[in-house]
Structures are given as structure tokens and as C-alpha cells.
Amino acid sequence: MPIAGIMQAPSVLEVNPSVPIKSTEEFIAYAKAHPGKLDLGTAGNGSPPHMFAELFMYMTGVKLNVIGYRGGGPALVDLLSGQVQVMFEGITSSIGYLRANKLRPLGVTSAERSPVLPDVPPIGDVVKGYNAAGWFGLAAPKGTPQPVIDTINKAVAAAMIDPTMKAKMASLGAAPMPMGPDEFGKLMARETETWGKVIRAANIHLG
Image (cartoon, rainbow, N blue to C red; front, side, top):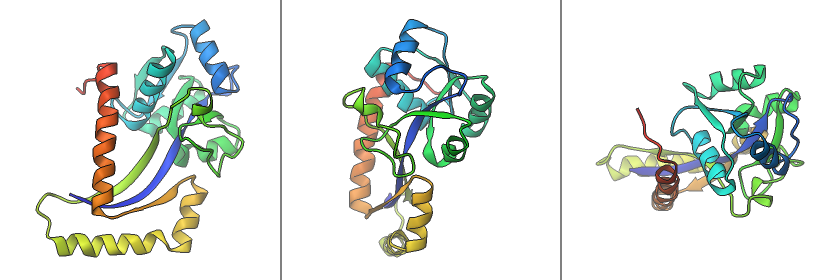
């Protein structure tokens, strides 16, 4: 049962600095000119970064070698070392490496620029209609008493307007996503339908 939305944050298309690419447009051209030469690290089969990459490949015709890891951390380690060349990864986990110039950002997955990466344009500026962002929320088992849901939702709503919490989210490239149970439930339904289409188109299977 949906309880409340918490926050949303885009991911970023990023490459190891050894790759001679500086924009989404250049990335598409390079990948098409060198088919099968770029290895894409993901947090695992069916993970959000994997889905964001599959949507990108579907919309551009680019083909990347998808390598699934057991989590985004190990994938980032290999991206930093050059074992893989590209990732779609959350800004919140990549921002430190991007600021240190250890990774190069090409585009953000959201429809608008991120305040923490103001010089990095949305992928959608090049790939029209591309828009993908991660989000986080709270849910409870079916049958959870309504008073419990209401109490938790009220506490989350209060946290979302706390200046310290908002500042912390902003520093990581995230933004509050205050939603009650009904609105959050509708978001979950929409996202399930949207990404279900991507999963079917890419013929992704778990296990």
C-alpha cells in the first residue's frame, strides 16, 4: 500500500574521462561508429540505471554491451578504473566523482537541468521525448491500518518541508516529492506501465 512520496532525482549519462566524448550527441555518433566497443555498467539486470539505458538505446538505435553488477557501487568502481566506459547512474551517488573530474557527465536523464549540474543539458535536448528520473517513497503491506498510514504520511510530509532536509537533498541533486497515498499510488501505477513497455521491448528477464 502506498504511503508517501519522498524524493526524486535524475540520473546522469557519464563516461570515463579516457573516452573521447563530451556530449550526448557525440556519444550517439561515437557509439554508432564503433558498434560493440562501449561497455555499459549497470546496478543489475532490471535496475533503474539499466532501464534508463535501455530506454536510451531504444530511442536512439545505439547498441551498448550491457554488463550487470551486483549494485551500483561495484559498477562505479569499474567505471572509474576504465573497466567499463559508460553508465547511467544516479546523481546522488556520482556527484562527488563528477565534481572531482574523475567522471565526465554528458547529459541528465530528467527533462530539465539539475541544479547541482547546471552546465549539463538534459539528454532530451538531443533525444526528443527522453525523460527518466529515479524516485523514492514509502509503502506498507496490504491491510496496514489506515491510522498507521496516516501517521507515517504526516511525519514524512513534515520532513519534506524541513529546511535542513531540503538543503541536504538539494546538495545531492535530489528534490522533495511530497505526495499522499492516493497521488503516490497513481505515480506507481503510471511508472509500472511506462517501464513495463521498456522491459517488454528490450525482452528483459530476471534470473
